[in-house]
Amino acid sequence: MKILVVEDEADLAQVIASSLRRQQWVVDLASSLAEAELLALEGSHDVIVLDRGLPDGDGLDLVSTLKSASIAVPVLVLTAMSDVADRVRSLDHGADDYLAKPFAIDELLARLRALVRRPALRSRPPVVAGHLSWNPETRQVVSNGIALALPRRELLVLETLMQHRGRTVLRGLLLSRVFGESEEIRSNTLDAHVSRLRAKLEELSSGVEIHSIRGVGYLLRSVSR
Picture 1 (cartoon, rainbow, N blue to C red):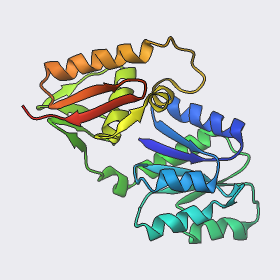
Picture 2 (picture 1 turned 120 degrees about the horizontal axis):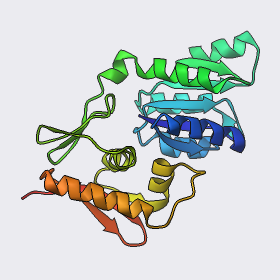
Picture 3 (picture 1 turned 180 degrees about the vertical axis):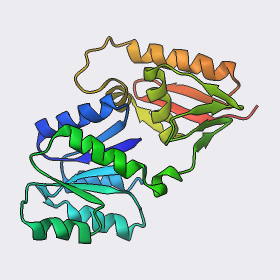
Picture 4 (picture 1 turned 90 degrees about the vertical axis):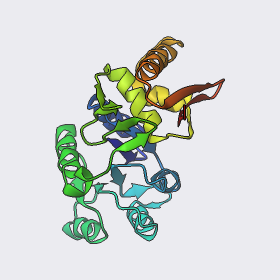
C-alpha cells in the first residue's frame, strides 16, 4: 500500500512514516497543503493521513481538491481540535475517519488497516507491466503465471517501480521507500538489490526491464520481444 502523510510537525511526521514503513507500506511525506496537492493529484495513493492545521491552510481543502479532480481515496484526518463540531465537520467534508491528537501509533495503524480493508480498496485492480502483475492488496507479484517470492527489500523496490512504471524514480525517493529515513546504508546497497531483482525478472522473461538512469534513478518499462 502507498500512503500519503500530510503533517507539518516534522518529528511527528517522521514517527508516523517510520511506523508505516515498518508495516512495509510505501510512504510519501508532505508538510504543506501545496505540497500535498502536488502529490495527491497523482492519484497513486491508497490512503491519505491528513493534518488539519497546515501552515498554508486547512487540510480539509485537500479533500475538496481531490473531489473536484474525481480522485477517490480514503482520508484519515488528524486534528488537535477537541470540539465535537470540528470533528463532525471533518466527516461531513468527506473525510473517512479522524483521530484526535495526541494519539497512540497503534491506534493509527489499526484505523488505517480498517480503511484499506474496505471493499473499494480490495477491488483495486492489479498493476500490470509486460508479463508482470503486482496486486496492491495481497502484494503478490506474478510473472507468466509464476508467483515470485522476493525478499522484503527487493519487493519494496519492485512495488515502487511498478507504481511509477514508465517514469523515472529518483534514487533518493527509492532509498527512502526501501530503507526508511533513519537507516544508514552503503552507497551501493540499493544498486545490489536492483541488480538481483533485474536478474530474476530477466530469468522469468517478465517482459519488463529496469534501466539505470545515470545520476538520477531507475526506470521500469515494458519491452516487446
